[in-house]
Image 1 (cartoon, rainbow, N blue to C red):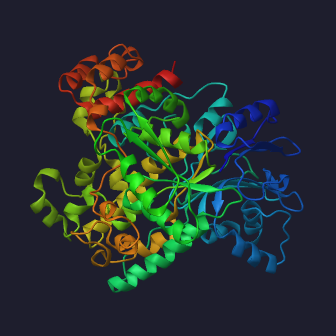
Image 2 (cartoon, rainbow, N blue to C red):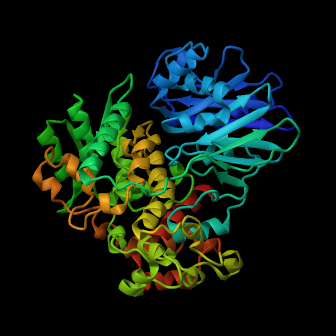
Length: 593
């Protein structure tokens, strides 16, 4: 995994020292090496920080070019089907000088242009500069596993893996977006294409920009190259179980490809346990890593021990205590934007621990979304129409759409417009969104089965914007690559194309996955109720901690939040909303002072 950056100037030549300083803000993403390429007129620059896995020689260094020096690449990610793609390209007459997946992208671009994107299997964000055509192609993988930001400011186009790299190159930092601040309080993240900074954007998952610089200012209209399929298949349960087994086996095998050893996160839940079990069947006894919480009877490390002992796997554990709340200051730097998920600290800790033993690990993101394992999916799983949903769950539905149900389920301290106005300083009320749940509404597609509607929302909002951002920043802060085999797009397409009656059972969580692991894992693990990667509630309920962080904080001093609104939240011991405000406070302290 790596850090990438690029710049195209419409005016003065790019300053090499400044560009390399921007590149090196991403050193944590790529501690193994670095490189920069500048066009002959120095109006184009690409930069790269390398975390090496395939072809560890200098032939794998980036930025990388084709044989003629006319096409240049900076790439972050892994292409798991690069071997068959390379064979196809060699048959078409292309010649390779390295054994990397990166070089496959260069020749794939030459052969297929933007059509290459539909052929790639993996996680990626990259930039390709075509010197002859004066065009830049930047693209992001289907689910948003790898990040990509961009902006056109002062006649300069920038793109990078993280916002901090772009900020480093600006003479003046952009103003923060108060709309994005409100969005963060609503969603726990800033949804794409927005960022926390005015003028800078996220490239959404499954999108690309093909930008011409041949005639002045570029047109920046992201194009979508992939969508989830419609549910159309109704195989027998047995057929579906066997097909999932084949697809998951292949995916795990591909995700284990590396010239260095790969490990795995292990929580003792279905998802991570299934991955280490599938790897074990393929002859890989992976080193595993787990975080627990002191004095908590539900601490995940004890379940991870059961799985590791059963499969005879090495397990590394660490326990978290209240003192780890101090990590919020570091997270404000590495995340670039406020991100209010309550598992950011344990995710950061387990990544740090794993990085001391391995350069890459498997992780179970995507399984709950695709196999329907979330608790909020269950109430609507047997319902087919919104009217039935409003009949069974009237207290969670207002208005005429499923959006309010989903917003309530996801909120962890909901900020609707009334609460936003009570919390945000009155001077900023004119910048609040008229409809705070706009992002959920944007991604709501009404399928005949409401479960499918919610699963699509999970994939494109919660997972794509929060879960994958969390895991990318926490791992890359320590130079650790996280690989997510459940997000193989062929497996995901198959699962999403199934009718819910094939894969959903009220009596059995993640039925199709369970059927494939029920004879492999301990009975205690198979009977575990669903539990997120969190700590005990008391860990997040220290009102004195919130008061100490916020009462004399920068958000109050900068008239971002209302003192009276804050006091109401403290009085009501509204810890989930206060948690989001503390995350925002830590961000403000790091980036605005």
